[in-house]
Image (tube, rainbow, N blue to C red; front, side):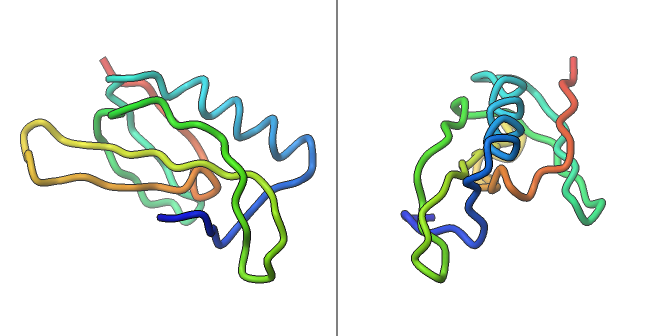
Length: 93
């Protein structure tokens, strides 16, 4: 995804929300991710995401993070998700 993001956060409350999401996404966890639009996806967290500095389209700097999910039953399936797109995370079995 590079060093650019559509959405970057600078307010402390928004950054705390990102940190809370990261805390619920440990390595190898099986999770169901719900997006702000109501869609969902289920997968295994490949590596706990990290909050990093990005620039948005206006070149403003702020924080976001990237989550990579995989599905061991479909080895070629991987999905990269911006933390800013996530409304909720549910840990599964």
